[in-house]
Image 1 (cartoon, protein in one colour):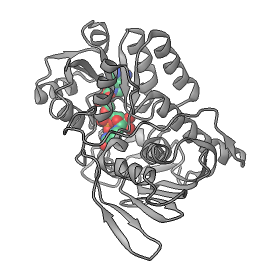
Image 2 (tube, helix red, strand yellow; image 1 turned 90 degrees about the vertical axis):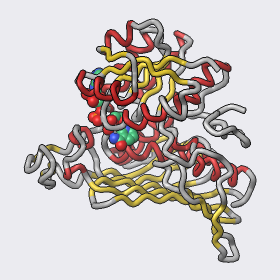
Image 3 (tube, protein in one colour; image 1 turned 90 degrees about the horizontal axis):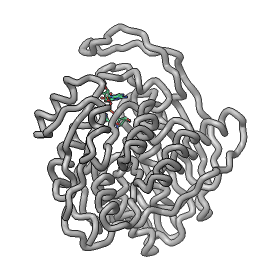
Length: 370
Ligand SMILES: NC(=O)c1ccc[n+]([C@@H]2O[C@H](COP(=O)([O-])OP(=O)(O)OC[C@H]3O[C@@H](n4cnc5c(N)ncnc54)[C@H](O)[C@@H]3O)[C@@H](O)[C@H]2O)c1
């Protein structure tokens, strides 16, 4: 199979696992040619770690005609502007979430890609992992009857430990619980239940500033402004008729993820959609709870799978699963949660999307097409 040549922009924390997987399990279809970052030493470090031939500036990377796809792993505010530049340069883009911070930016990216005949992909791709793919199959095969409700919770600490090198990004729109963490839950829900029709919710910001409390952080003792909601509760109505509740906060301590889908004949306990694997359980009406073996491979940390899937799609002409259109719907839902809270009403969504096609059964490990 032909390898698709990739240039990576953004060599921060998450680039490590992407580069490990793109040069490891997905090297049969991806060839990472260059890394770029505003901080050239970070790009150099990653290139040395993973044997990437070139360390470029962003301009150099975009000017390299051999690079077909830009993998955008930069900070949230840079996603849409860089994706537009990459598309202008004639390259497909696969970007980390959030896809954009406004609907207008999201639409501009999709429209430019359409005009140029280029692909757009966006994280999360965790819904392609064994956990959520198994849940999709169980729902589609009727194991829980008609899914009528779902409940998602992601409660985690705020950024006051200051250990992420750019922890300030988590205190702004884009790093907030809705834009940063809900994409995993919303994408899994849309992949299982289909698109969302309307949204209501409440968003609040418990503090105006935080002080970094961890003495190991270079920012220890600094007080930093909080610029986005940090505690959010939403209700989502799906076109299918199902209704879901979603609670997301970056306020308290620890990390408490939970996702359940309730059906007329069983309740499905979905593993944390921030990861690829995890145990799947069904609670049956007789009170029994059974763990269900995974029907699909990819239970390990597989970030980059959405990009590998897009590389298959570029070559075969099929749709890519972690698509820009799916991400656009997720942005629409996320912004609608904030708007519903501000205006105290239901917000009807402008966008819709088809459920991404489930992965086929019987894949050879690491392949994404039969
Ligand atoms: N850290 C995680 O665990 C994690 C997990 C999943 C997804 N993500 C997402 O991945 C993205 C990156 O996260 P991260 O934790 O790696 O952040 P990071 O701050 O560690 O890395 C981002 C890198 O992008 C570079 N950058 C920013 N703007 C740029 C520009 N205009 N041109 C070139 N380089 C630029 C920065 O210098 C930095 O090195 C975010 O959108 C985040 O939501 C992060």
